Image (cartoon, rainbow, N blue to C red):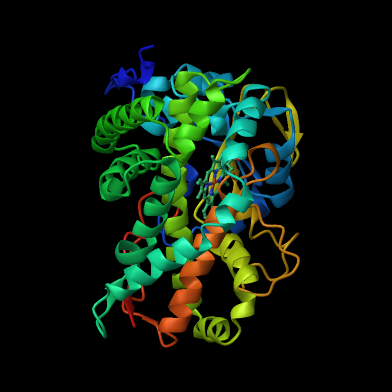
Length: 424
Ligand code: HEM
């Protein structure tokens, strides 16, 4: 059977007279990339359910939610759908949306954008291959990749943590898990970075680059899937292909969408938990020193870094019916931007939320989402971050920032640094 994804996804042209829809507009205000938290605090206080300005002909409204209880509700209540196509705003404006959003809404719907029962069926299959036990078994391997990356650093010279460690480690690990050649990691990282950049930018140049990158990535993955179909190996793609034989199993397109999601989600996020995490620990040297002295605090430190400045700042849902939230009616069909970053700093839930408290307990942060779509890769992300922090604290107890104000990527949803220069 021919594999459908070898055919590139549909490319639609953006009409220049109808500019792109900038759903993230309120989060793109001046200074907010460096530090979005004051704006979150302000919005949560004065307008916790904020209508996002949209053109009159957009089709439906969009809302930004910043209270913990509201974000928690939206992530767990069946009155909200993860299928972006349920919103006329998305359905009627596909050509005006960032590519990544358009593809996942349109042709290549994946776990993130599916509702039960399709979501349940696919998640069950992927869960089987992605068990916490299988992930924990990778610990020794992740440690040795980390040690090798750190060995490669030139001694006594400053180094860029993002480029040298935080990017390659998760990319190599997810590639190996999936069964994608790890030596290609820089290539597929470039493609996924182009996709992610367009998600955060209404710029036409970024959108064009993302369309091309998406096509390359799909063609690349389709070829690997076809190879594994002929010759299975001990990897996730082969395991998912095996599951295809079962009743109620994945379609070819779902398999491609899932592999694509895992490849992108598997490294774009963890890279930035490591980067944001180390930056925040070093901005408060007593926190770094404490972690060096008390490595038993590593697990709770990782949770606190996810809360304090996690890489996933927001996610989307669509109201299936009118729902009252924070004294506003979110109408049926409205698109909801649930601000995880703002929820995680809500003083109604977290005492002194602007303080990095490495042994915070309890810490019910929403950094990995909540309920049905709770992050599949959470055990892997936690393990990778813990291993890197442990290795860095052991090797470089006097680590410090070589640049006090590192630059952020232009992306208010996936928050992360372009570079983090450190003195060993
Ligand atoms: C620090 C790293 C990570 C963070 C902060 C993170 C965050 C999230 C969040 C917030 C969601 C829920 C989105 C929603 O409800 O709309 C999610 C879902 C997901 N994540 Fe992660 N993630 C991380 C790492 C990973 C890794 C390493 C993988 C894969 C290996 C992964 C795979 C996924 C998948 C497949 C989903 C969709 C689950 C579903 O819809 O059932 N993530 N992640």
